[in-house]
Amino acid sequence: MAQNDNEQPKLRGPPPGATAPPDHVKKPQIYEIFPSPKTEGQADGAVAEGQKSSSQPTITDGLQSIKPNDFLSVHKIPCARQGLMTGIGAGAAVGMGRYIVGGRIPKAANWAFGAFFLGSIVQWEYCRAQRANERVAMARIVEVIDKKQAEKKSQAEEAARLKREAEEKAKQEAAATKKSWFKFW
Image (tube, rainbow, N blue to C red):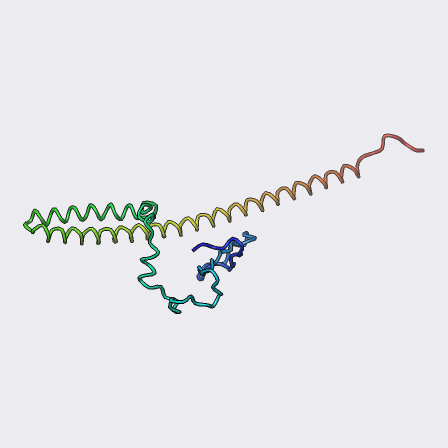
């Protein structure tokens, strides 16, 4: 979903369910909403000929969106490698085990595919859950660190203010007690 260069993204606040930013954060992050892709000459509310007016994508839309380059970049998807490797191992082990126990090759292949599919999905979901938990923990750590930095900064500012006040008071006292070097009689 590419965005036109001449069109500004729409800005909105934090996603639903997000907590308010901490007190020390002056400017919270703003998220972008990217516009839906439009064909040339299509108005905002217009529907191109041959397209359905429903907002739900169809299976053919999904299949048309797959590009050959997508298969070359599967390794870049988080958790894909772990899921596929676990599935391959599970499929090989279950298929070989089924064949050794006495199953015929087609039946062992079916068991191997089922184990591959199940092992891949289970590992994928487990990895995604771990990443989500890690993301929550990292957000909490960043929040705590930001709060501590804000506290240290405010303490340093307070110490600097007290030091300036003490220096000014000392200068005033020194000026009041200082005697002139000459004497008028």
